[in-house]
Amino acid sequence: MDAQEEDQTVIRNDDLPYPIVVSTNIRPPLRQFLREARRFVVLCDANVAKRAHALTAGIKGRLGVLPFALGERRKTLGTLEHIFDALAEAGAERTTTVVGVGGGVASDLFGLAAALYVRGVPYAHVATTLVAMVDAAIGGKTGVNLRAGKNLAGTFVDPRAVFCDVEALQTLPYRHLREGLAEMVKHGVIEGGDVFEALETLAPHAFWRWPWETVIADSLKVKTMIVNDDRLEAGARELLNLGHTFAHAFERAGRYRVSHGAGVAVGLRAAGLLALRLGRWSEAEHFRMLALLALLRLPLLVEEDPAAVLAAMRVDKKKRDGELRFVVPRSLGDVETGVRASDRTVMRVLERCVTVPDESEFW
Ligand SMILES: NC(=O)c1ccc[n+]([C@@H]2O[C@H](COP(=O)([O-])OP(=O)(O)OC[C@H]3O[C@@H](n4cnc5c(N)ncnc54)[C@H](O)[C@@H]3O)[C@@H](O)[C@H]2O)c1
Ligand SMILES: [Zn+2]
Image 1 (cartoon, rainbow, N blue to C red):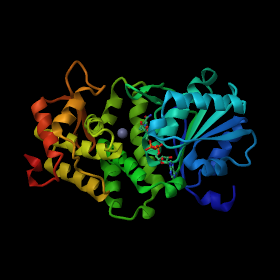
Image 2 (cartoon, rainbow, N blue to C red):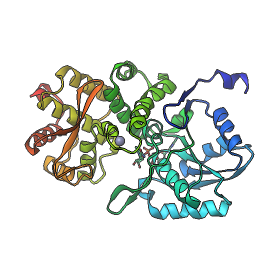
Image 3 (cartoon, rainbow, N blue to C red):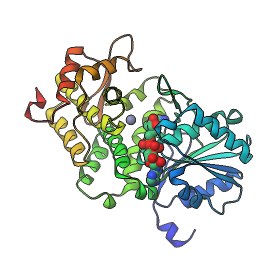
Image 4 (tube, rainbow, N blue to C red):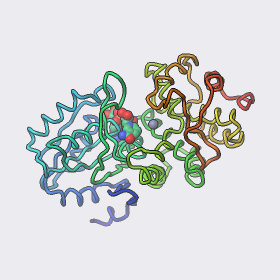
């Protein structure tokens, strides 16, 4: 390792059975991992193919770098089949490590491909979007979309390692960065304390001044701690659905014109509003959360018709025994799951979400 490489911060999280490495210079730890793997194939999102080549060039045992045009609409069984064919053609065998490079679509799709190819090969992911770093690549969930809905076919399977390639964020378009910021605010509300306050402190500053390694490592830790308690989603993981019952309904009612990040941002406001109506959380903290979302230039309202959103909510797969359950904040750092609310109350909340917050937010 040369002096410059040593200078770079490398943060390692060992909460889960595999290491998660966060760095602006991911090359040295990645190289070390791949040297131990001996033979490996790189699968990448075509938009980061150059990066995938550069990160793995000159490492012995590379069977190939295979780019795929991805995007949410290509997160399908059809793409999975192309990936299997490409792996076979490259000569991948049971002991070949598959390295995926890309965002959340790549980690869901390539992770699933690795879990299924010759009944499972070792998998590592190099995350190149903020969403993948703080959310999608962490926790071992993989999946593809079916005609019936998103992420309906997949597995729980742990990768061997996850590398958060912080330097890659420099090329990530702002609209994709924002998707990850919404999940980071969610983590901030769940964890409270320093995690929330760090975002508040940084939000007014330009992104290039943010200490991204630390911010990403702190945010993904919220997920690793929760996942560690609940690897197969029996209970605690439900906390991570804060804002998401609303988010999915906004997305569905808006026929996916509302992005997931926008859905989560407004979903957090909605969860806060619901908690206020149920007398569970304070106006002061609600306002702090809205202020943070606004400073990060995340939306606070959606245009979708409240009745259509409520209808979409009813078909949400997270609905249990016919009744809607919500995850709501009680205070920053204290979030409650399984909260019931009447349709009337939910409608009141949704009717607020089509307007900007003002003093009437609170009653
Ligand atoms: N499995 C899980 O637990 C989990 C959790 C959250 C989200 N997800 C999934 O993650 C997906 C969303 O992930 P995403 O937001 O990363 O989307 P994405 O993977 O589609 O990436 C967003 C866009 O950025 C491009 N891109 C990636 N890295 C880049 C870089 N460094 N520079 C420039 N462009 C780059 C991609 O090609 C794509 O166009 C969804 O499919 C969602 O279901 C899964
Ligand atoms: Zn989400």
